[in-house]
Amino acid sequence: MLIKNSNKNILIVGGAGYIGSHMSAFLSRIGYTPIVLDDLSTGHRDAVLDAEFIEGSIADSALLDHIFSTRSIAAVMHFASFIQVGESVRLPEKYYQNNVANTLNLLIAMLKHKINKFIFSSTAAVYGEPHYTPIDENHPIKPINPYGCSKNMIEQVLADLMHAYSFQYAVLRYFNAAGADLSGKLCERHDPETHLIPLILQVANGQREDITIYGQDYPTPDGTCVRDYIHVTDLCDAHFKALSMLEAGEKCCIYNLGTGQGYSVKQVIDAAREITGCDISVKQGARREGDPAILVADATRAMRDLKWTPQYSDLKTIIQHAWKTYS
Ligand code: UFG
Image 1 (tube, protein in one colour):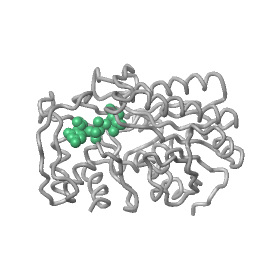
Image 2: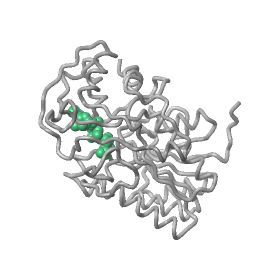
Image 3: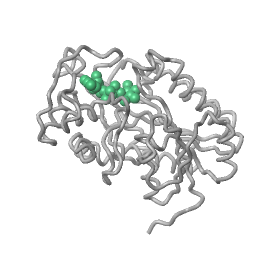
Image 4: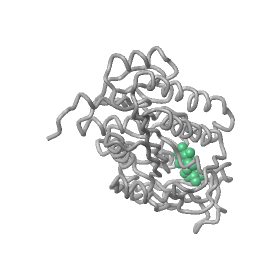
């Protein structure tokens, strides 16, 4: 039987967003006490199912002081980033303000209140254009857009904080987060939606006319881009295991989170046709700027160190779970 442990208050920054809301529900299920801080700029209040909710921003130092001085927080998980690569190229200052400056503000507040465990959502975008595939953590770090740069900057800040203080952190570099948890109560909702699987399912449920395939002339077996889709529940499990490592005394860890298995855009569309039973109408489009042909993780390190095995990340399960919330 799970026992609620009051020393297990975890602050989930961005806990009303896609991955953060799943993380909050996951922690709650296993006996932790998530506390969600979200400014609702992209998140949804109704995605916070079973946690205290505080509306506000990590830019607000007074609010952070209040939270940290009135609650005993064991660790902070940070999901409150802007994530659109294309937008980051058009509006870089927006990305550096939120993903870098505001995150630094959060870290400074943590130091002030002696909260020393931090789990950071990073991204495969820190690697930039792949030099080889699958990509392991030793791959050169060369982000090619402000989004990837902003994540890399915070990775650097974390390394320096660890050297200067008794500060512990985990950096988790996600590949393509997808799917939804089994409850059917949470889903991927971005506005505007830019991610492949939600867009395909919006075609299947009649919200959209068609899906445009961005480029069919890539050097891949069917000409469309290949990505490594990782189920959001498996991501949450990896976060929990990384938190456990920090609790056991590990000072820092950096992990790729993916499956090592890539699927092309066409394969994803075909799988969605099979699962939904809908004829998904497709348009051919030009390549989207900044899309590498293949992005597949070598996640051996996470699997070995965290004893983490993705359970739900085969493509059909991901689409089935996502479809439950779209249908
Ligand atoms: N795609 C289409 N049509 C669409 C949308 C996407 O063909 O309408 C293609 C993209 O070109 C890409 C694949 O589907 O090849 C997946 O695209 P997503 O937008 O779903 O995801 P990305 O791979 O672009 O982005 C993900 C994360 C980012 C992260 C990036 C790492 O969502 O946050 O991986 O490079 F930065």
